[in-house]
Amino acid sequence: MIKLIEGRKLSHINLCLEENVQARNASTGFGDVFFVHRALPEISIKEVDTRTEFFGHGVSAPILIEPMTGGVRKAARINATLAEAAEIVGVPLGIGSQRAAIENPSLAYTYKVARERAPNIFLIANLGVAQLTNGYGVAEAQRAVDMIEADALALHLNPLQEAVQPEGEREYSKALPRIKEITEALSVPVIIKETGAGIAAEEAKTIEDVGAKGIDVSGVGGTSWAAVECYRAKKLKDRLHEKLGESFWDWGIPTAVGVVEAHLSTKLKVIASGGVRTGLDVAKAIALGSDIAGLALPLLKPALEGTEKVVETLQTLIEELRIAMFLTGSKSIEDLRSSSVVIIGKTAEWLRVRGFDVESYSRRRKI
Image (cartoon, rainbow, N blue to C red):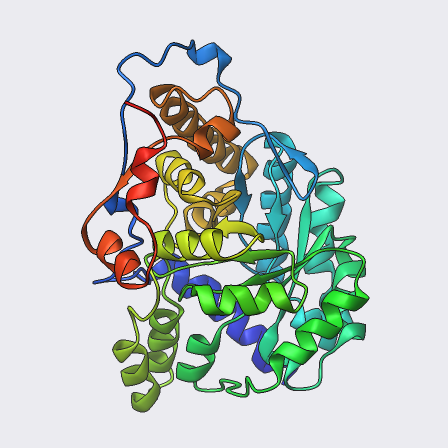
């Protein structure tokens, strides 16, 4: 089993680098979101401050480096580079699922390297909810946190990936009681994170009820893990699972929709991820109600090129965010959260059908 997990981890990294694993006919919904431009912003761009707090930890910008990998030698290099860049820029970092190191402690170094290279950042540990329904509990969760001296624990949801994966663990019953045990036992906040298919308001409320403090909506529109598993199955000559991956390639809730639903339905810290590609996407996510926005794939290739490339990419994102703030008259991230945005198209239609007030977002600034 350990060798299987290691091989799968490496395969996931390589497929994300080599193949087009993005959503094909689905989008994040950010293309339906438009800021109301301020022709007279009445501020200097020098006054724009992208700094904010995330679970009480100061960060240079509301940008999270999303979990990508761990458990294989190549992952150690990626995590080290991402951590170094996060430390330099001053943004939080999440690491990939630590199951591999829980089951084989000799692989712990591929995760520990993150804290070693970034002693001051907000660092998020990671385990899968699918493992909670197969025997994992408080002890494993605490081990994951202790392994990297984490400031929070993400419990990731990936029922879509498990359903189409050849070796998928499809048991998701009684997950909520296990999650509740962990939220009550751990001293660090627990974040429930999807992995590219989104989270609806109903689940967001349930997640809040069992004691989680944050939610990472990770909606459709970015990397499709059904696509990744489709490519894996193709290489394995497993026609059934290749077809399943094809069929569910674009399954899920758009990221913009997930942010609005979570924001308006709960008091959780909301992380917007899933297809976030630019600082303008980050700005839109904040205006829709997220506390921070996360991205992974745009940083994966730079991570293999070195720390400077990751830093350069993050700094570009922050500068794009700064300009969006300037053009909306927002001196601070709090100002940006109350800026006016117009939501149209399929995103607006989806939200209206679900009972959410789309128009209120465009009426924040008095005429």
